[in-house]
Image (cartoon, rainbow over all chains, first blue to last red; front, side, top):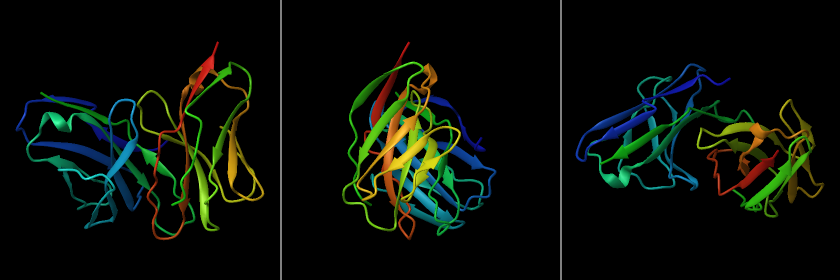
Length: 115
Length: 111
């Protein structure tokens, strides 16, 4: 079983609030990812990190930001939540580059509803 | 990364083998084939991956054709808990390690 944790699992919040979605992994993985998925739709990569102090934007543009100060922690922040941010956010991690494998381990996700 | 093509949905009787096909005709020599599944909006779960040889683990078997242009994921004795969306993904092991999940195949196991 993968040791990657996301909190909260569910979040209902009003428009304009600042929110932070937490993601932590205990596997010592260098690489971490954030995906966004609407119900019944595809997963879209919105942010990724190759290690501490490394962050990159993914394939889908997002108003969220991320930080990677510690290897095990990759929080996602929305400065001012809007109803269009309502979605499921999934965090994942994988081993270092050039291992010949690209196995990503996912957390259970955070379901965000912005009213 | 090479694109993949999968059927939108499939049904399989409980206890039978579920065979999920995937076409990846533009795959290049340094790209692996990965299979993940996602059960009811949980986080995706890694199943298996391979380069050119057939692979088997405790969850499934992966059969890759000799020309590597297609593959089949086999769940040998499907159970109701195998109902999920199955994603076939091709990804290079060098540099770009992002995974593109696509729409996958929705597999429904019928009692």
